Image 1 (cartoon, one colour):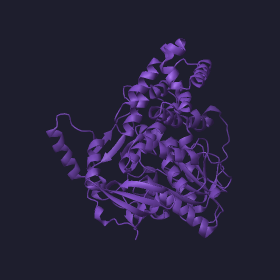
Image 2 (cartoon, helix red, strand yellow):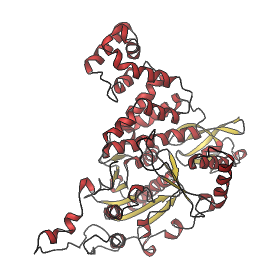
Image 3 (cartoon, one colour):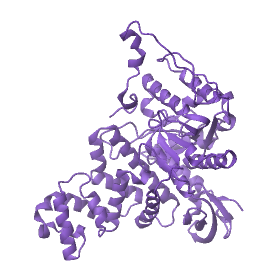
Image 4 (tube, one colour):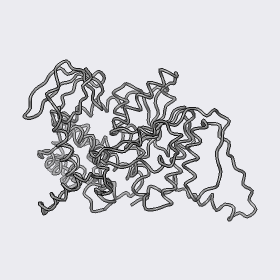
Length: 521
């Protein structure tokens, strides 16, 4: 397992800390004046970094004005967090005449950008990714979509050409050119040529049998889209090939694939038509939007590592929860925690005028939902210099699984025997939920995973929704798609299919019990 919490690009802080010892007689000159940040932002930065034991003692100061206090915000989930970011961008543009290019959103991992990108896209706010690609432009996502498209339609020659050698199968460019030529001559798909390679190109027959057999098996599966994605990545060997690379880049790609599972799970939960075709149609719209050319006046999204050396008038530091930032892999090592804290310090000091710190009560990432407490780094900032502290850090309700200290680690750390890659998800349960799971375990010799148990709890809670309140013509709000108007209602067993024309996202058909709609009028 590659340790992603080593110093940035392999750097070692000890090279600086031991400099005086290694070079006796060295004179230390501390550069403590800061010309970028306001006074209150520097207070927050100094309050955090003082918790590191391995450091040079210095305290940044500035002649700049004190400025506004850093703001802390807690959302119900990652979409509430994204909505808050959109609201603040629009407010500051309207009230203080900021431009889109004045805003930057910083996160710990590339895979965190997806929910924020969804909201920016729906709200028609232009954005760019620095040091990386937009979510649907990333190679591993494009490859997975190509596999799904080929499973859905074996005549999709473009998708086949993209993934026939992903991972490597010994089918070279010359062979693909021959397949394409025969396909055009015979008027059949390239898939059919490869499927019948013993007839058309015998030399590639052996190298392509496993590929053909896998696609044939996958296209005949009758499973939810998320299961199909998981099986596709497993059976094609795509995920295993990334694991075998054993690099930080490959690990990041696995995380992005796990986040793609979250996209599928959200689709399955809310959509009426849960077919692969419908899923691909929605993905195509998102992908097409990603390909639009960026202008200079855009919101910037990037990882904290990419932000080093940069500055913006307004910074959003997002995903500030234990297990996300700091990540779960750094928890057991004080040196790793200090490296993470230095990274948080860097994020804070990118802000020139306004700093927003955000976290969520629950977050669905890597295909799993976690209920984790706010980051320890946030708690290291004195509450008197954080605007919104009381609202953000208030005690959580029992339904948020925070009543007792019982913790369930879901998935476990990286294990080469895992079928798909895994991450730790820490879930805190209420006394009632803990009691229920103990009863269930005693009555079921096989037991249940924390995730499946919590899914059942969430389903029960969703089923308490009063679906009779919805009416045609009502204005409603959806956490992802925004505001819309109900145009049609159709009974479906004990649920209702709701057709909604959203102002920004267009027409959607959702299941009422799982859509989480808020009635506006």
